[in-house]
Image (cartoon, rainbow, N blue to C red; front, side, top):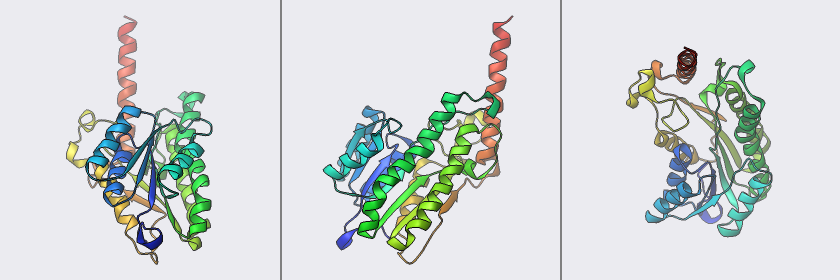
Length: 271
């Protein structure tokens, strides 16, 4: 199913978490494919940089500086996009929050923030765009999940739980809307070199063995080019080839390293 609306026109896209990393890469790729793209995120300066890069390449971009975790912000983002660019036909949820900790060490505010950003925001955005997609008989919902959401990784805390739940949310959207021309897919990356992830060098892994944001943008573009008769997913895992770059193992090593460093600092302070 290609990402086209009526008369073969590219679908209007809304990308949540578009200021950097995977979201920015996907937004640029969608714009290069002809979609007008609304860029939504908290960091206004970075959103404007992404928008300028899209416009410099001949694309259309609308930066919207919003904290989607705030009450009413998802509905505002969809309404502002529709007013400026047209109805959203392609929703990409890439906004994410992560705070690693064992369950007994997790603060309630960190738990609530991760579930709000990683699960409730995709739900609210999907709820806003699905009626129009169903009425028009076409549309895409693409959630950026995580390989950690498909594994039990000690210390993944609210992040692992929320990503596991968003996988199920996507499955529900897919089943409820597949006969109305609307497709839903979760792209669940392993270790991707972004600001939210551990640095490969810190864990003794060469940078070239870890995925980058463009790899995920490539995957999204590939999905959008599938013919309407083909159902892919609704969960697509994208992992580094090297076993030492596996996301779950890397997350565990990163958490253990952070704990050891914290214990070392505490011991030094108590001397």
